[in-house]
Image (cartoon, rainbow, N blue to C red; front, side, top):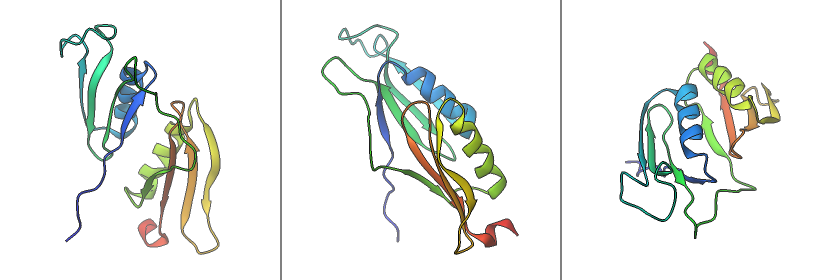
Length: 137
């Protein structure tokens, strides 16, 4: 029996509301945002996001980094969505993630006949999307 999958929890540099709302527009799902004010926190702006959850086809959690926390930055880390949806949906997600970001490796058929590509979104997350040829059927 497979174990639980890790869920990314991203500390954004004051962009949690924008990022999580953007991910909801791309992936769908249920978004819940709770502010510093909601949680009675006084260590940042009352409207900053203290805890946000996007639960759906893609699950992402996040918050605005607090004054003593480092905001997300990464090298050598990919958020894998291999086989996570139909090829049509994955193509749509890839294009949407590329808006305002950059394509690291174009979505293309590989010599082993699977499709994949990498895109770094506008918030600094690098995504690996792809599918096996049987998924196109």
